Image (cartoon, rainbow, N blue to C red; front, side):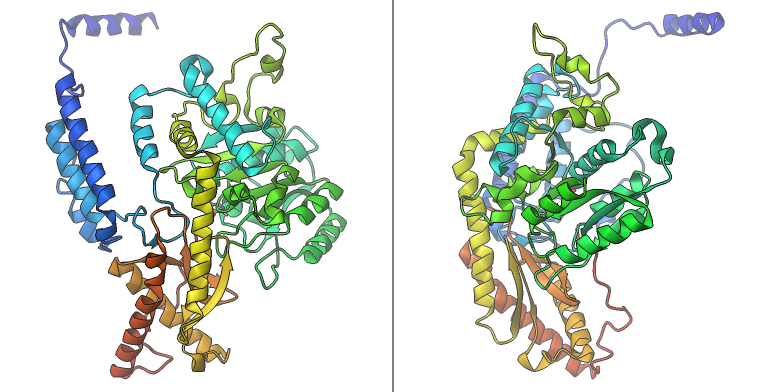
Length: 531
Ligand SMILES: *Cc1c(COP(=O)(O)O)cnc(C)c1O
């Protein structure tokens, strides 16, 4: 020990610094001019976004080739030039979810004020793990959490935290459920504390986060009891009750029921009020996954089940979806703030509450998995202040209205088959009337045809839907979480789809392919995993 110290001392002596040049720092003038230029370039992107392709659909190999130097550069480059070159490269080959015809997965156009908010947050560089390190930022995050709860009709005195996205928000709530419902000290003893096996209940339309959660936190995916759904993709309540009864007989420990406030595939809303009753009766933690649809609860005429958020023990929502925050921002809300703290804190919970002179500060590291944390809340808070509740009501209502207008429009085209319409998601497929006999031969053909059609549509760069599986049917899925989308944008889609469908069928006929072996028969029908 003493020997090492001495050595350390000699080294420092030899490398003594007098005056310092810092390669990474930028002189104020350079920072200013590079920054102004960058803002100009982003402004140009936003103003011209409608006329550029959604994406260029190059292969990973082509994209990798654009990054010329394979190893780390030995010496540096001027910041200004570097930023210009990099901006040019990113503008050329990104996928622009801010494009008015981007409707894939659930990724929103980024709110311009959020773009600036992220820049500001990086400039101030707060560590929102502890109040002492981020005084105003901590209170802004706490206010953002309260506003989000208020927006969706959850209790505003809940616990809550901003995280990286919907998956993480669901994980945080999952861990709170596990802590609250395990009958032993699960944080200390892990899953070995009892002979009983924890079990979770959700519909078979539930997002893949539930698999990751059961896997990552040691329960294993066998702990999921997937309950079948009805013809509207909602959980079958009778089947759920039977499953619960059987599982108890088998000696399982049911602890968590998940309801969907908008499934990721088709925007289906589970019977959230009925689920609340079942959860209470069975002593289950009731969690609502509102990552996609939760914010639709802001609408005065929202579905009655969307107004049942306050029945839940926890809710996950995703500001980088329907609050249009730039990535990343998810939010976990837990009805009882003490439970959230007891799930993550390694200080006694009373630290926060026993100071009766002054309220103790919020230290967000005690309410989630992260220690050091960025200032995600700022971009969300700024957008909420910029447009208020009424602004979000209007944008979300418009997104939903556009999805419904598209659904109606599709029904005017004999070659298109409308499948579902829930919240702002419409699914349909290209299917000539004589192909709709429901035979497995026809269905296989239509699945291949629509898979190919979607791949070409996405690669074409004119519009970007994604896919859903609707009762075995490969569907084109348009999910509008996009304040730039107009009625003309959605009305342009059906003719585009029909033209492509006809073109593909013609090619397949010309190349003499039989139905069972179209051009791409080397590939089996592989349905891309949903996100
Ligand atoms: C998107 C989504 C998720 C996952 O959210 P990420 O932000 O992508 O991590 C979970 N559940 C539902 C219903 C979703 O739509």
